Amino acid sequence: MTLHATPASAGTLLDRYQSIRRQSFNICAPLQTEDYVAQPVPFVSPPKWHLGHTTWFFENFILAEQMEGYQRFNEALNYCFNSYYQSQGPRILRDKRGNLTRPSLETIKAYREYVDEHMSRFLEQYAQDGLPEDLALLLEVGLQHEQQHQELLVTDIKYILGHNPMHEPYQTDYTAVTSPEPAPLSFTQVKEGIYTIGHQGEGFSWDNEQGAHKTYLHDFAIANRLITNGEYMAFMADGGYEQFGYWLDDGWSWVQEQEVKAPLYWYEQAGNWWHYTMQGLQPVDPNAPVTHINYYEADAFANWKGVRLPTEQEWEAACRLLCQGIPEGANFVESERFHPTAPVNSQDFQMLGNTWEWTSSAYLPYPNYPRFKGALGEYNGKFMVNQMVLRGGSCVTPRSHIRMSYRNFFYPQERWQFTGLRLAK
Ligand code: AVJ
Ligand code: FE
Image (cartoon, rainbow, N blue to C red):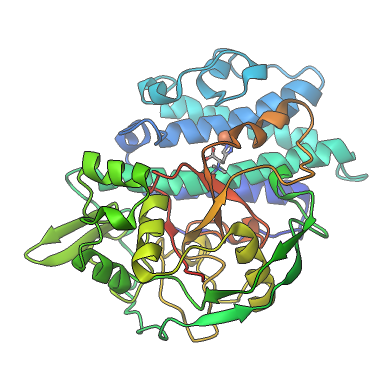
């Protein structure tokens, strides 16, 4: 498998379109036909649904709206592949996506080819003069959307294979890395003052990170790296999951109801911890960053340590101070490790790549939030309640997709994404 880095701007628009579309397919290369259909839990979508939905996005929002005489591949697919757009008509319930044994995988492949073929013809019209601004934004949103679904594809595939008793690996051709012991946990002091938060400058950003604004931050300190499995195991060994005092009440209910004892994918065998990784069942590496923990677990760990999680504003201010752009060796999907890795040296703060980092910030609109106009107004804004912000991207995020201002968001109980934590105080 080769997951090529996507050219950020080089090459024609069409090259970029094709390269991102191909990537979704490449991610599915190790799958067998049956793997494409499973929906083990409501929040995991079947891989074939991702392939159909991302295609529908281009068909519905670009071709059907803007291409002269475009005929939809099959009108009935709107119902199957509209995710949550109330303005775009009725749709299959999210937890029923696993019922989609039809359309077949072959039909979905044909759907992708049909839409890609029409998209190339459509884009060719603009090869000379470039796209008008509104169309350029729509296309960009379609591509960024496909990249978000590439990350969801990998994490949903991990859930599907990782909850199958065969525990077969996704990746068989890889070189095992032994992680060096990371530098001791230390904290970098950041001065109180006024910091600008939010997307600034050139390039794409989602509406939820726009509306750059000033924020006052008190003195704080941020950890030099992510928390490791070894550190997390110390929390577990010290009764972390047994003492209510570390937990938020919702978190404690969750621990008790689900009888949680460890991160997702972890298994104890003869006193040793193993976990399902994209390379199959592996011993837990104490030096690698902990992942697949939810907000409650991240928060409980911080309480146990006597410190806290950073707010999203602290995280972004610290990232702008500590990182000059995206580090060369950062662990994104193109490294094809599909797993977080230890810092390469003491200057590797691991802020970008490896794991998404839970912040203590609720996912809310910025003070001057400029919601996307039209149908895409439903894209991010309507989810701004009851979720927490995560920052920095993960080992399965496409490198060209991340920014220091990027805001991801999940419900506090969710832990099937590559989520981890960094401490602050
Ligand atoms: C930003 C990852 C929370 O999973 O629904 C995909 C991404 N938005 N299609 C999600 C998304 C529309 C979104 N997250
Ligand atoms: Fe989507």
